[in-house]
Amino acid sequence: MAKLPTFKSSQGPRAGRRRSTVVRHRILRSFLYLLAWIFLVLVLIGSTSNKPVLRDTYFLKLDLSNIIPLSVPNAVLINSIARSIGLHDFYQVGLWNFCEGYSDTGITHCSKTQTLYWFNPVEILLSELLSGATIALPGDITDALKIARLASHWMFGLFITSAVLTFILIFLSPLAVSSRPPQSISPDPSVNQTNPVHRRRTFVFLRSFPFLIITFLNALFTIVASVVATVMFLIFRNVFTSDDYNLNIGASIGTRMMAFMWVASAFNLIAFIIQFGSCCASCCRGRKARKQLKAAGAGSGSPSPSMQMQEKEKPGSHSPTTTAS
Image: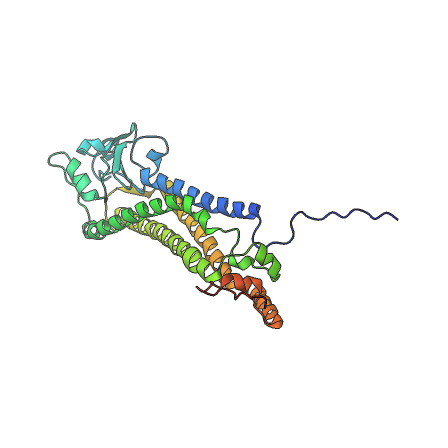
């Protein structure tokens, strides 16, 4: 009776990951950092000019179109535009500068970009008032400006640093993924001898752990910058719109800017969590296979081939030659 042909795989069992798995992991990490970097760039260039998307991306917008108290005769007519006392209808704040404009025409001017820029509403409003016009600003705003200046400098530096780190990690993060990580070790010594995995300590301390530190700092910088921006401009909004003062100034938080920076923070945080899991896996997984290899080596009275490959050859340890007598 004729035997049926047997189909054998061209490759036997092997240690390590499949190439498709490695490619997917690398693309995922680069893609996460690419998305985070795009949103961070939108945060950096928001409200820098009167262009689509940029004109609607700001941290805070002050509405001064109703700055004249309603108790003043003909206040409704006067408040049609704030230019009656030399002010613009609205002011909006970005990371590098501020923009101003009128309700009927939109943005008319954006200030020059400035490194370590911080928003000083008192200086801006008082500098644009016509001669003889005044605005009674609460003392809380003046007191908060000192803190706002320091917070703005930290926010500016953290956003710039996180944008640079995120851009670098787009290209470096795939290097943290290996086709032969320590956790992919096989209990079969012959498989490890054919395709040896990385040494666990060397891989963890020289490759996996350094990437963990970098991704942690990147996520930390982005999240802290987002927290500082959110808290600081919420305080500004609450002071201007407080019922304790009759300022008639409207203030609103830029939802688009907030969404951009928090989405960037989320992507960087997810990328850090993935790297954290990868580091834990390379450090802790594969112990069962290592114990089996160690037990097999102890049972045979000699170390397994995989253990022999991890030992460094000592200088001068050549095998003795035998001569025929």
